[in-house]
Length: 284
Image (cartoon, rainbow, N blue to C red):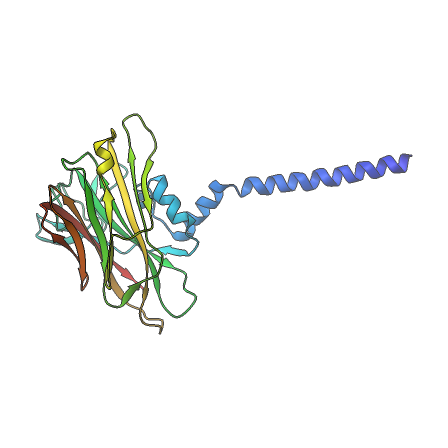
């Protein structure tokens, strides 16, 4: 009987030890830890992370093929200097400076823009993707944000364009629009689609859905379009290139669309509109 009791005690002790180890392992591999691990793997800069809301960050972290964030400089147009300069960023203490740490006193910076900078911004991000063959692949995000509601709340075309060294990868498009209401602390998805509104050999585009702002009490509206691109060359090419993005805000009746030639996103149609664009240089 004593031997039988001892056997039970040994078995129970072994079970508790295994259970304790398993529980400890589970705690060390919570989604939070996995999220932090992916952020570290992608080498996402802290100031860049501060710009991302949970919706687009989830999209980025759930893409298992993303390898690394391309931190090449984004350039914008300086009215003061009348030339393209590194993009203006904001430090944690609120001091304005450029990515090359060239501090400035302020001013208005417009990347080929007519939409006011205090109402709207658009940014393009580039990530490197895993490649199982001898092509190079990139994931492109064009991100827009309206800080306050514009006068016209319709559908605005926006898109990205690349050089003729690249082509879109099949079935990789996604466009998401989302908003925040006055009493909300989080963002609500308004539209999520894989459909393209515009496409060409050198670019693709989507329609930002501002219509919901006319029937809902939004305080902010954000969105992004995303597409994977790959080199046409299969000989493992290397070099530097650019991605351009452009956004057109429709301001009345008529039609608006996009076309893609060379490396530009051109607005087409007869409706009155304002635009804002940006571009990024990246390595591959």
